Amino acid sequence: MTTLLVLIVVVLLAVALWQLTKIFDLTQVGGNVNNTQIANDNDNKVNGYLMFGFLGFIYLTTIYCLLNYSKFPLIGDSASAHGPQIDNLMVITLVLIFFVQTVTQALLHYFAFKYRGKEGQKALYFADNNRLEFIWSIIPAIVLAGLILYGLYAWTNIMFVSEKDKEDAIVIELYAQQFKWEARYSGADDVLGKANVRYIDGANNLGVDLSDPNAQDDFTSSELHIPKGKRVIFKMRSQDVLHSAYMPHFRAQMNCVPGMVTQFSFIPTMTTAEMREKPAMVEKVARINAIRAKKSEALVASGQPALDPYTFDYLLLCNKICGASHYNMQMKVVVDTPEEYQAWLKENSPKTIVQAVKTAAAEAKAAEKPATSKDTTSAKGTDSTVVAQAETK
Image (cartoon, rainbow, N blue to C red; front, side):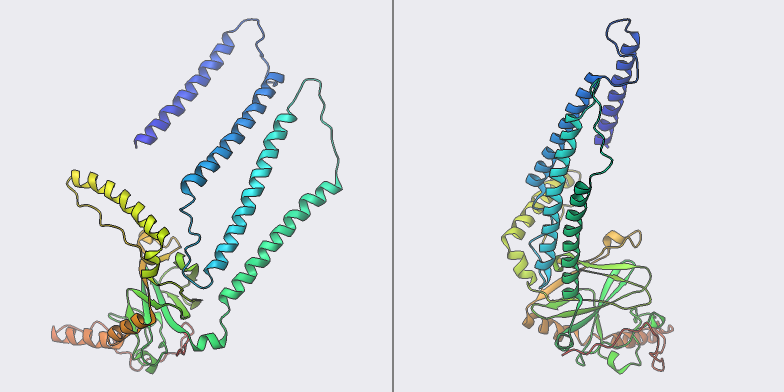
């Protein structure tokens, strides 16, 4: 609020000074006062120098941002096999944009000064120049074509999953709803059961078809665990509105569309523990905790609890503005070693969706209340929006 008030005061002062200048000009009698609205040589010269000044402002701002904020962009800390390819494409694009912006802005402001208006000087008019038009058309066309082809090549490599890769992949469902994520794992049969939003009821909050034999050992988790070095295929559904599953460190993003199943796949290359030990990440965490510690001092002084120290975790975020609590729609992602992942599966696989529904029904019966979930043992899983069965090994 203080900053806003200061900005308002500065703007008002600038307006007042401008008005005083106009009043001063109107009160002048005789002299060399320019009473017309036509710019003279001095006006053009001043504007030319102002253009140079603005050019310097652009370059100084760019240098300042590079020196102070160059560590913030998410480049160089990818944790998936395809991540470096995405980073290379981003770096090439940024370098090209930076180079073109630097050159074109310098030429723009230089020519604005060099060819400023002068009394008696007439502009030299060219109806057309085929050579110039060819140069400034063909160069951007070639550069953009190269970027587009590289982007298509990268996208094809990322999205294409061969049948051989599918045979050795893990299939996990990511279920999006306002405003949380839930992951569904296949059990010992390595096949996800069918599901449909019409089956959502009570403990069966993912709409799993309980009559499907492949669904009998499916279980859910509010924390996404994946193993390092093994391909993971994500089947994505949405219960309500359009969401977007975004895992920035894995360079992965795919929309979750109501009524259909979308898919994305990648291979994790770095466990959570390994990422936490990277020097750059250690420095980043220390910098964040220093800021939080300073903030905590002010909170404690005002009688409020201090902030907890920050610890790095991979996150699954929603990258679509899906409602009022969109900002809070996230889930922790843990990349385990293969051994740790198997231990986690062994611990959590008994907590099946079927068992949760039976437990909820038993509790309701014990409390002499109607069961919170309906019997779906005779339901047919023939709807077009069911999750495709994905066999894994």
